[in-house]
Every structure is written in C-alpha cells, then in structure tokens.
Amino acid sequence: MPDPTLDLQLTWRGTFGRVRVFADHVQAETSYERSELTTVPMDTVRGWRMEPCDFDAVCVEFVTPDDTFRVLLDTSDEGVTHHALVRVLGDPLPSQS
Image (cartoon, rainbow, N blue to C red; front, side, top):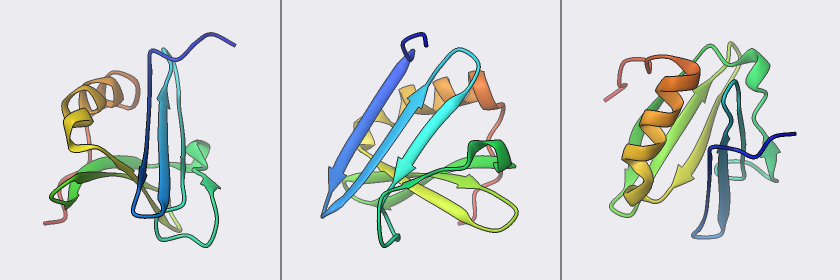
C-alpha cells in the first residue's frame, strides 16, 4: 500500500483521532464520543465537514446515513486537512453552526 499524503493524529483529553489521506481515499479512526477506538466506515460516508470543538481542537465530521463520526485534530492542522480532504472527498457539507 502506498504511503499517505497526509497522516495526522491527536490524543486530546483522553481521546484519540487519526486521519490518513491517500491519493484516492481517506482512512480515519476515532475514540471521541465512543466507548472504544472506532474505524470510520469510509465506504458509507456521504459527506464531511470541519467544525470547531474547543479552543485547541477541531472536529472533522464524517457523516454516514446512520451516524456522524467526529475525529479531533489540532487546530494548527485545520488548513492542510481541509485542503487534503477537498482534493479526495470533494467539497464539505454546510456547517451546522
């Protein structure tokens, strides 16, 4: 398997989040709002967006028909993450705020 073009992870207040962006797909995992580390089912993701989570974290939300998976990343990674996700997944969904 080729190396990802972007590989970000954050351990934040006892939770773990990771987003790996490849040329043609995205992998993500999160324990935020979950009882255990969960792999985001990217084959069912219908859209994504980024929202602020706190003053020191940003949420990448992957929306499926049945659930929303939130992956926390450092606010300093917001711009590069947004650019990489647009390139692979297309434009984000409208903000919920």
